[in-house]
Amino acid sequence: MIYSVHGKLISKNSGLAIVECAGVGYACRTTQVTLSEIGSVGDDVMLYTHLSIREDAAELFGFADMQELHCFEMLTSVSGVGPKAALAILSDLSADRFALVVASGDSKTLTKSKGIGAKTAQRIVLELKDKISKENKDSDWSSLSESAVYENNSALEDAVSALMVLGYSQEEIMPLLLQLDKGMSSEELIKETLRLIGSRR
Image (cartoon, rainbow, N blue to C red; front, top):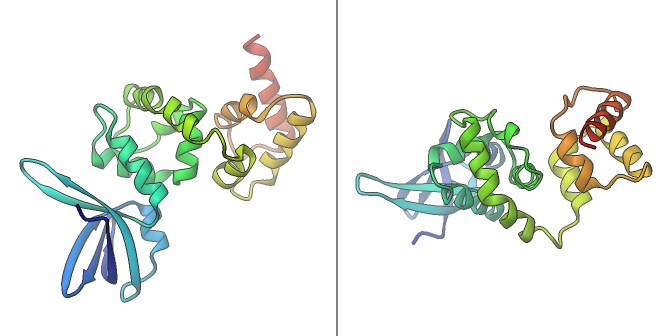
């Protein structure tokens, strides 16, 4: 089992990073998130890896951090989700945001990734929701939400604060906010969230 590769980045293109270690070039399939974080060709890099061995191929997958690797391994444990689909999802969503999307049951966001249909997205949520929620039960929800969803969106931050003042919990409102257009103003986000809450009662 190859745990990690550490060496010089000799090639970097869509979905692939090649790292030279002691004269050997390791081709690591990876996400756009990792590619954006590891720097430029010639830089010293380290990737945490997952080795996949099948009857017809052996592939190495590399990630900039352990959290993204863990999400990849969880995704590929889901029936019908292969490495290609897992990379597509984690190229569109950071590990933190992926965890939040699944924990909140937002399968719709997963369908925005290439090759992920509604049934597959629902299966991912069904099989991983409890696992991710359990792993994150001691984490700071507001910190996770800020890093994964706010993304410098002050309107979203203001909407969350206002809704919490009204007595709603983040666990109750975040799944609803994730469904809305992040380009809305704070007033529009609040109004639409309250409408959604009302329609469920």
